[in-house]
Every structure is written in structure tokens, then in C-alpha cells.
Length: 621
Image 1 (tube, rainbow, N blue to C red):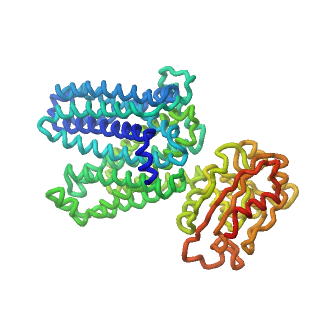
Image 2 (image 1 turned 180 degrees about the horizontal axis):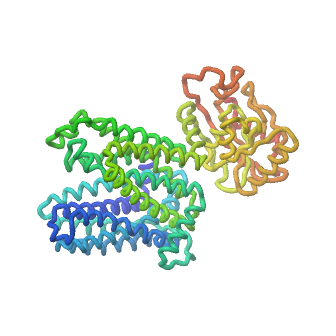
Image 3 (image 1 turned 90 degrees about the horizontal axis):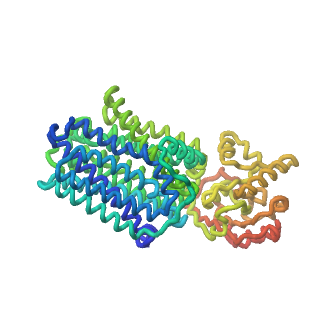
């Protein structure tokens, strides 16, 4: 059974999953039925023009995320989360009951007001929706849970849009719409009743409704951790791109692909299924771990396939008379491929960002951090609409050219994020190494403490030992490195950004390095040293230097022996005399990273730790 299937079979996850999917589904049934009915309603029945009504509806649905997200985040941190969700779902039933009456009596102004209230309900559900995951899932399940949530959300949006179209085309559309929105709201509440309890993150938090102050406070909380902020901005950028693509699908299908309404739904289907596939693929590629290194891969794919839309769009608009003609038209197949892969790489891009945002947020502030994310998401979507108006309306770019601009902007954003958060670049390199050059397996890494200062000691086989260890360990590691390597051109910036501790065999350098190691350990960080002091030249371990005894004397912390196995003979080892100056092997090396039981600082010594690492390594070098 896969990890996703296992989660869906568990009570601690399934009711939550069903509840959030039904919420997204019902939102889209209501919103799209309303917009379709408005499109065919007489202006006298609306009291305003159709275009004004549709644009007003879009604005009213987004506005609550600005007004109420911060307040909702505080409430979600203050109160027990499962009960909070049930209250929100009860409110949804009330709103949808009123909507049912409004549908039956064709009260479009009331439906517009209720759309605003639905947006408000969604704004209150958003923070608790994502804050609940880290409380109910284990750390090694968080990426799988987020992948399933994104899959469920986008498939629910797709199904909601399709069902809305089916309902709106029936002769008794208003009655069907009225019954449907109430039914799915009730089903959402019933599933919410089975969500297990999740304790309040900060029950002593004082909450009062002050939108401006709360927004400032909420955004300030999100800004405290740089990686959290960058994750939020990355997620918001994804919604910027998504809103930009989805908004243009109707005109793009009509003007450039020769399609009709069904064709627009097909494009949406490709995009949504792509997101679902990408989310699940991200979980598999990352080995069910939070792997920021996959984010640049997602960004690169978004850029490549988004830019290719300009070239795959036919020069001559094809003539199609039916939906079958549309999907069978050879000149459109590359467009379909591009949209599917934009979705796939979008899923790969966004899942690790959500997981990082959740995992790095303090439990007492997690809902408020997610509320800040919702505020930024809404802001970016509004900016995407403004950009489309300027580029398509004022500058008069074609829609395919607009897609190219989006891709170039995405490339710039990806480079900026990589520069601002060096861990992304580090994890990207690690990901490439562990999925291309090596087959990396981890054993007994549970011996590495989840928090608090600790010292890792490892054998030193190749130039990529530190990278592989950084990729294996779920916590950031501060590595001690030879000062000569630390100052290599270009790489120096990377080492400095990664907070590497340089050391050289001189009294001043050693003293400075020991002080930095002490400081990092006292701050609760993991520090890794290679006590051999150099790469092995014959595959055998070199006796550990006594520097490790000095470190433990001034900062007694637990020591975790770690063995690297299978790297001898690889391109980055000194097998054959020189590393990096030989032909790489055609086959991928099998590498094992194994941690041993912690050794107390009172029992640790260079000799004992040498024997511990050697025993872990065994006969495999």
C-alpha cells in the first residue's frame, strides 16, 4: 500500500480530506452556476451589465481574504481546530440555504451578497485547513498529506466546474442548483464531524476584530522566518501564474484554438489533472520527505512549457465543429501537452512549499502564518488581473505572447528565490546527486535528534559527502570544512550562505572554528565534522584526529556516528589517484547512509568514535 493510500484509509486524515475537497467542490458549483446563469440572464434581471456583474463577483469573492484572513488565523490558533472547522461548515450550510432560496427566486443581488459570504467562509476555513496537517500527520507524512490535499483540491475545483456546467444546462437549473449547494454543504459538515480533535495552538491568545492591526501582526509573524516568507511568496507566485492562465483559457480557446465552451473545460481539465499528477509525483520523487530541491525543477518546467505555448499555438486557427474534432486536431496536440505539463510542474513546485511553510511555523502561530499566505495569495491574484489588463488591453499583446512573458517572469522569480534561500540551491544539487549519480538509501536516521545541539561524525570518502549528508538529514547541518576549499572562487559564496565553518591547521583558525562550533551547538544546531581531516586515498578509514575531543570538552553534546558506504570508486572519490579527473561510471552507485546510536559526551573519544563509525561502515567503503 502506498503512503497516500495508507493516509486515505486512516480516520485522522480521511474525514479532513473529504471535508476540504467538498468545500472546494461546493464553492465552485455555486460560483460557476451563478456566473453561467448571469451570462444568460436579461440585464433587467441583474440590475447592471453582465460584465460588471461578473467582475464584481470575482472581486467580492477575493475581498474577504484581505478583510478576514488575519482574524481567522488568530481564531484558528486560539481554538481547538476540529470544532472550529465544524462551526465554519455549519455557517456554510446557513449560507447555502439562503443561496437555495435566492436561486429559486432568481434574486441575483442576494446571490452576489452570498458569494461574498462564501468567500468569507472560505477565508475562515483556509488557515485551519493547512494548520491542521502538521498536528495530525507525522513529519514523514507531511509531504504526502500536502500532495493529497493539492490533488483533492484541484480535482474538486475541476469537478465543481463541470457539475456547474451540467446543472446550468438543465431546464430546472435553479432547483437543481438550490438542492445541490445545500446537499454538499451538509455532506461537508457530516464529514467534519469525524475529524479527530486537534489542540489549540495558542489558547491564551487574545483575539478581537481589528482588521488593520491584525493584518500587520499576521504579516509580521510570517516575516520572522525567511524560509517561511519565501515559501509564502513562492506559493503566491504559483497562484499568480494559475490565475493568469485560467483567466485566459476562454479567449485563448476561442480565438487561437478554434474551440467552444466544451474546449475551455477540456483545457481546465488538462491543467487540473496535471496539478494532481504533479503533486503525487512530487511526493514520490522526494521519497515522502520535504525536499526543497524539487522546487527549482518545478519552476524550470513551468518556464519551459509555458514558453513553448507561444510556439505550439497554431499560426492558423483550426476549424473544428465538435468537441471530438477539437481534441482530434493534430495541430493542437502540443498545446494539450504543454498545458498538462504546466500543471504537472506546478504540482511539483507548490507541494514542498506548502509543507515547508507548515513545518517551519511555530505551532502557536501556524494558523496566522497560513492566514498571511492567504493574504499574499489574494494580492498576487489581483496583481495578475491588473497585469493581464495592461499587457493584453493596453500593450495589446497576443495571449500566446502573454504566456511567454509569464514564463520569463517565472524564470526570474525562480532565480531570485534560489538566491534568497540558499537551502533551495543546496537541496537541488543534493536531489540531482541522489536521483542521478547515486541511488541513496538511509538507515537508522532516527538516531539523529529532532531538536537540540548534537555533533555528527562521519568517515570521509568523497567530495560530495557533505552534500549527501545534508540531503539525508531532515535538519539543517553546519559543516566544518578545510579553509582552502572554503575560499574557492564562486563556491565561496555558496559555502558562506550555507553557514559552513572553515578551519585550518593553525592556532588562530582552530580557535576561531572551535568558537563557532561551540556557538552553533549551544544554539541547538547540528554540526558535522569529518575527523579524518582528509579524503581517504585507499578506501580505508584514517584514525580520527583529536580535535573532536577538544570540541566535546568545551561543549558536551550527544555524538552521532554516521557511516557513508558505497562512495569509494565513484567519480568524486580518490579511487584511481585523482577525484574529478577520471571517466564517470556508466551505472549509478548504490550509496548507504547509516547512523548509529548516540554516544554521550562523557563516553565519547576520538578512538571510540572511530571504532563506532568503522563498525557501522563494515566492509563496504
